[in-house]
Length: 389
Ligand SMILES: Cc1cc2nc3c(=O)[nH]c(=O)nc-3n(C[C@H](O)[C@H](O)[C@H](O)COP(=O)(O)OP(=O)(O)OC[C@H]3O[C@@H](n4cnc5c(N)ncnc54)[C@H](O)[C@@H]3O)c2cc1C
Image (tube, rainbow, N blue to C red):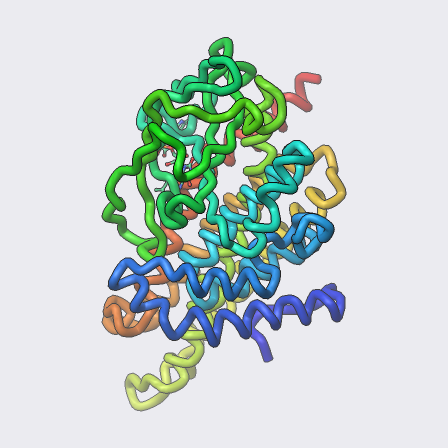
């Protein structure tokens, strides 16, 4: 019996989930500790995931995508994260970037980029955060000035996931200011890895997510063809935020996957570990803790699937539900892993038992794609607006 319920899923969804879970078991879990220890970004493994449709999950089929729903994507990211949350999370960002081009790109941009992204011949990065602003993203200062048939970009992006990994075959979606202060003065650009004037910072030393690089990306009079403007001038912030609705679900699903892996590990461990002459699993206090871990994951999963369905149907509450789901799924996944670590006793603290890596990987999900405080801000703003309407 799986430690989570498949109730309500179609046979096709169960098959999709099993495909991703099998990939996680065979291709991710065995090597994840080495990638983490040696800071290896396994591009060939990502391409193998792409061959199964997991690099363009909700891009349209005619554009080389799998044409699946956000609920399907949630199943896939949760399953992948049981093998390695850091790799699942990079795939989640890559999927978000592909969706931005599918949803807002010109026919020429879609033709030029989407198939390569779906095969992961081209890797992508989402570039919003800057050294001076993260949560207050609308205050970003990277500038894009039109010069003839091109824009000149100048500024610095901070904490960019996956940056540099594709070399020249890398596409950066960069939010930069083309107009007035605030969100309406921001535009989005497709910047190729080989663009002159683009330089990468060192791979950051991090607490977790060591299987994927995080770098700053600097633009110094970086020339980008005007044809690489994504959407219209001034649409950039809207596009970036729309992408994050889905990105937040993906990251939340990755946290559920890490939590699920920890729950499975804790069940196995407490069955075989003895204390006071019997297996740990026979102590009711510990059974209750395991029951709570499973229950809290189910509760968060239910909200996440509801938010995914709202996004699929473009419901007016989708942004609010995505923010709620991201907050609860990332907090729950982390606390379930922490509970599992406690059940392992001292061994949970050792690298060889795998739970501490889950804890390190999942910690950042409460910070990125909008911190969990910003998720509360979105929900509260929505509630207050409705009261004042
Ligand atoms: C490993 C990693 C990978 C990342 N990958 C990417 C990426 O690929 N692309 C990208 O663009 N960014 C990325 N980020 C950046 C991430 O999205 C930001 O770190 C995050 O949005 C927070 O911004 P900040 O770090 O500037 O914190 P700040 O905005 O300085 O916030 C600091 C603290 O203050 C709180 N706070 C801020 N404003 C408020 C408020 N109004 N009310 C209450 N609390 C508030 C925050 O919640 C936080 O706890 C990544 C970050 C990390 C660590």
